[in-house]
Length: 371
Image 1 (cartoon, rainbow, N blue to C red):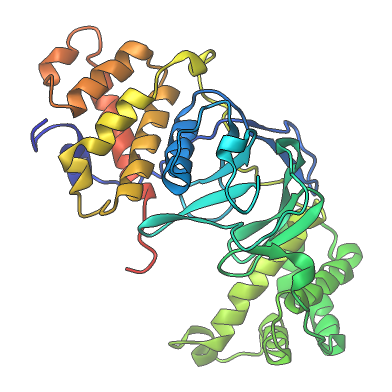
Image 2: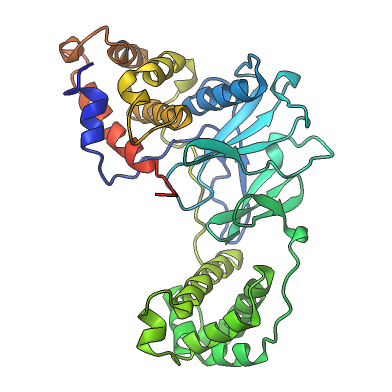
């Protein structure tokens, strides 16, 4: 593979298409607005399983089979690189701290476990994982094994571990219920401001409390809703008013979802993989991709686990495009520098174009948060 082909061509053209690592497993179809969505991780071969297996083998230092754990890839935050939900099913996939679930999220150079600080006295099964329509910050709230979990800015914690602030809500509730901004927000979702305004305003106030915001921020948001702010307060650098308007929008969207006033945003689930996809061998392409010097030395990827994320995303995209085992084998040979572009003719002539498109999407989905 030379610098005019394949991966390097994709790196140079890294575009704006958001590429998602499509998950194995499934979500409850037709979930009602305001209802928790059940996520059912799957077993057996899949691109997500191949990535999760490598991550756990690195952590635990032993071989793990595809039937030793259940895996789903799902989007539970607002970035473009889905998380991996992992449930151990066999002792080989369990760590020293027990057979606990993991939510593995790519954070800059490496995957981190968003459940790392949680203890699980009882074993949790894959059918006990739900995504709620409400969220804290950029992350959906979860219900796992009957426990309500919220993201505190760095990891998931028990909702009961967050002590809400106690705020004086009276002035806010009065202003909120009379606000043109509140009225417009409700009408945009087909709601009746007179009937639903007080309920939304109460939810907003409770949301500020449950997120541990101060009285000063609630009062500032009241002024925002009353249109009582100068241009400097609204648009000036480091504007506190802009900060609380962003907080208010987050809480409002969470309230709308919780109450079923807007359609649920479903986490990404496998809906587009072809039937029988589990019969394919995904390891050959992922191994070849993660060993390719142009991948491992890429400035954009930079670390082995970012490269693994890219290679899993690439494999998933090729699978979604409907290519069979011969396509995976041909790309694996290409990444091992065993063949050239000419070897894709004539039966797989479209595969390289699809590969480049998927690569661009995957490159764009892997972002550094500290740059």
